Length: 166
Image (cartoon, rainbow, N blue to C red; front, side, top):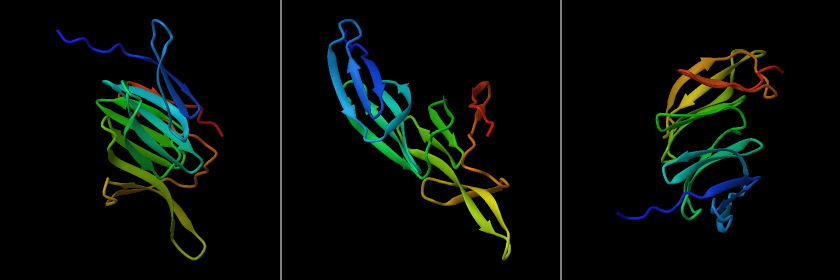
């Protein structure tokens, strides 16, 4: 029977992932992801790593054995809020966007807030959902929003609910 490599202990520090042998503490690999790490989710022999910086973000698929980034998808919002992983899908939300990414790090859909003029002196805030090719799938009126709030997610019994008070 082939021997499988032991799963390393992965330490996430700001922009770095550092893998250690869990038994000895020996260094296995380390990698810099260039952006601050917000969330980490194990997926088989890889990690989905949610990265953020002001105004934008990304999800990276990192190989657990080598630390190499296998794939990366850019997001048009800072995924600093809620995150859920269910049925091989990662769901992310923040006050200014929402997205769904597969375990293979491919964008399924995403959405962002957009001001839509309704007249000379009025505008509505809309959540615009788009597919991976940019095609519009939905426009939902969300009313006045501020980016100082936060976002939560609920999927069945799973909840990622930050403090929603302003």
